[in-house]
Length: 122
Image (tube, rainbow, N blue to C red):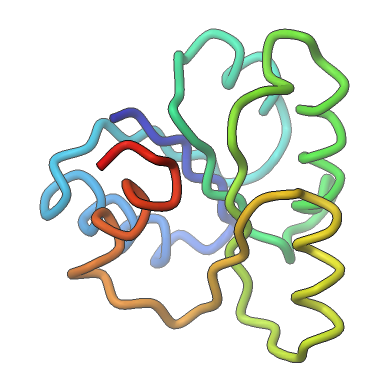
């Protein structure tokens, strides 16, 4: 399984890579921000994208909009990562993406298994 991780937090990118690649045995590419996300996603053959919500521009929702407007990337499942709680924020993200919202903190030991289930790749 191949996952694109987009997060502006360098430490979190390292943790996500460890959780997905080393523990989960997935192929992982990481980006520090959303610049160029559409081209990278289009060329990467990704099974899913883990996308941070709160990033400098483009934000996670802006990245999602770019992905959805491109024929090559519009069908790649996007899973938002957010530290923000609150039902209203989570519901807005779920409506926006039509996909899943994972909240931080998450369990790195079970993240890969959870992603497989969420992406129907188990």
